[in-house]
Every structure is written in C-alpha cells, then in structure tokens.
Length: 274
Image (cartoon, rainbow, N blue to C red; front, side, top):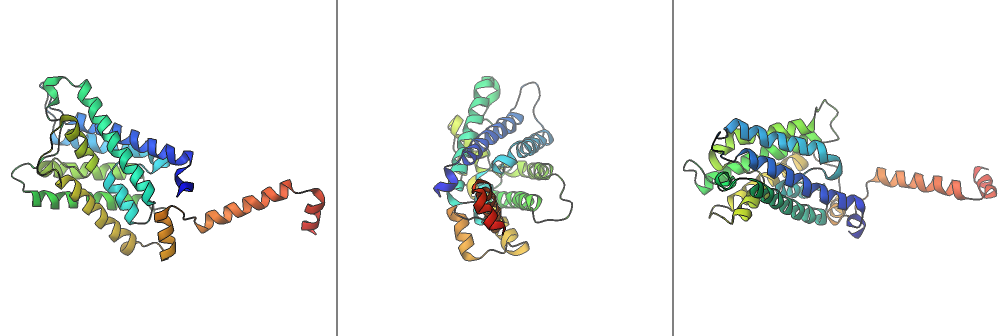
C-alpha cells in the first residue's frame, strides 16, 4: 500500500481531484444562480455542468482519471480499477474541493443572488422514493458512459471520452433538474449544503441515489458486459494497492537487464555474450 501512496504521482492525482472538483462545482453551481437581471434556463444549466465536466476530464484525466465524483470513485473500486486507499483519498479530495468551490462562489456572489447556492432539492412534488430512483437512473447512465468511453480494450472508434462524458452529464441534467435538481454527484450536493448550512431531510437521496446507480453500472459493465480476466488474488491485490500487471513486470525486468548490461564490467559482458 505504501508503495502506491508514497509517490509524487499519487500526490499529483489527489491534487488533481481536488482542483477538478473545485472548478467543476464553481462553474456548475454558478450557472444555476438566480440573477435578478436574467434567470438561468434548464438548457443553460445543463450545458454548463456538461461543459465543466468535459473540460475537467480533458484537463486532468491523464493525472488522476478525473473522477470528480465520489460515486464514480466507488464505482471504480467496485470494478477493481483502483485500490481502497486511493478511493478514500480521492473521496476526501473531492469533498474538500467541492466545498472550496462552493465557498469561493459564495464569497464572490452578491448577497441578493446567492439564494441557497443551487442546493439539490426534490421538486414538483417528487417524493424521496421517486427522487432516489431518478438519481439511480441518472448516475447509472453516466457511469456506464464513463466505463465504455475510457475502456482501453476497445478497438472501435471511441471518439473523445471528455465529450462523451460531458454530454452524458448534460443529458442527465436536461431531465433530472425537474425532479431533484440533478445531483449524480454527492460532492456537488454536499458542498452547497455545507456552505449555506442547510441540510434537508431528503439530503440522503443525493448520496444513496448516485452511489447505488454507480455501483450497479460498475457491476454490470465490469463483471457481465465486458469483464476483465482477473483471478481472485489479482483482484485482492488491486484493492490492496499491490497489483503489478504482467506487462509492467516484463518491462521492468527488461529495464533491469539493460541496466545490468550497461553497468557490468567489459569482461563479464563478454562472457555473457559468449
């Protein structure tokens, strides 16, 4: 485990998740503020959230994977893509980043425009049970899109993962806003509630819904639709953070062999060649 987390690459990934979630929340919530001069439309908010996610994926996916969402991170853990420790650190970075983004937005927004900072809430007489099902469906399609568009095993024309994921978020908002304000992301719901100190009795919907939807999508994609050929010991090693793919082990072996050849004395190299 220490081998995984005690590296600069791991630290960069944590910082990337913090920054990506902070920027995403700032722009997403900012698009939903009710300015006196011009109220935002459903299309505007949906596009802003989708464009924000697409931009963050393009910026940070090569550093951390650009999860930007605790539900997505849990889905990657369930699918045996990341370790338990990486999951925990990512989720903390995402929640802190989201609070920072919402806090900055609160500070720079005039008091007559802040409102409730676009907190997710059940709308149009939607019951908690209905809201839960909606959030499950919204997040399910998002996580399925993430796994499908970032799967390196695919040989067909995938296109741009950033664009696909951004459009998936936009799609969810175009429908979900009418029911729940569209969360799909517990960090997005948690941050404004913390900043304005307003937690509703239905706040649990915006945690359980996205997480259940993400887990269902992960199980379906990674264990049924397109499973990975891993045995139990390999799966356990991934969760523990000690897994080393065979191809990476072979590359390291070749590098060690070349290093030994370069540093060994001339006579010894001659004997090896003979």
